[in-house]
Length: 292
Ligand code: A3P
Image (cartoon, rainbow, N blue to C red):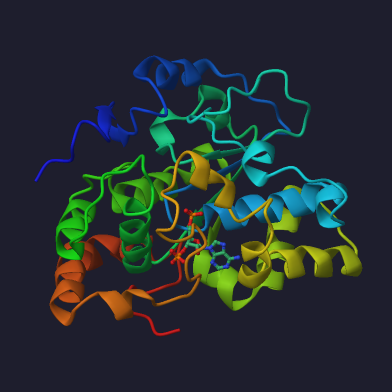
């Protein structure tokens, strides 16, 4: 079943959300001027984007760390292609932090000559599928698909906003030489948050002392983020999410797919993905059926 045109449109082989962006704007991004100091978080949806946004806010902004500044992370690390708050990206002071779900071939041209830094976060696609399923039923800008089986087929076929997980991850991974890129997984962050924060700091050339590091880690835990209005995206319930239907920060665990997928669905997933994922093993450590 094809996705509804009310919720996605295809541009240059990639599914975008029509109420958030136009084809002309996407095309204009190719010439978007990049600064050496820019930092981009790149993800496929539901892979830990907001988590990484929060970590960058905490690393870069002392006022965010100590709670003296109250700016939500969606303004501090805005979406490049979904400029829904009409922010002036061109005149933002450095270092500019951005988030994007774009595939490697649609990002600003200058990003491809290894100028700015890119942090790519990936998550086990089975958990991504389950998280995306729940999010589709929460977000008013995505098509509601109450039947997981139907959603799963859409996901496996890449017929959802941001298209195919496999194409996204593989594209960024196989074109890594063109970018100044650091790969991280949701699972690594979950298993050793402090270690992940340290790796991010090292990549960014940021030196935090032990106390600052402790504060970053403490404020980036799931429980802390859930109660932090700057980081929990609850404010999106006024325009992008349906109130009363759940929260953006849903469960925040590894392996939730096992609570949702039947054995048959999991095997179907394996049949479509596993073989094609073999070449990714040098970049990402997990097997999609890994236990925690
Ligand atoms: P679940 O739906 O499985 O709970 P994204 O930001 O890319 O849309 O990803 C959202 C997913 O990341 C959600 O997964 C959300 O709960 C999870 N997440 C966000 N912050 C987290 C944190 N601090 N720790 C663990 N998971 C987190």
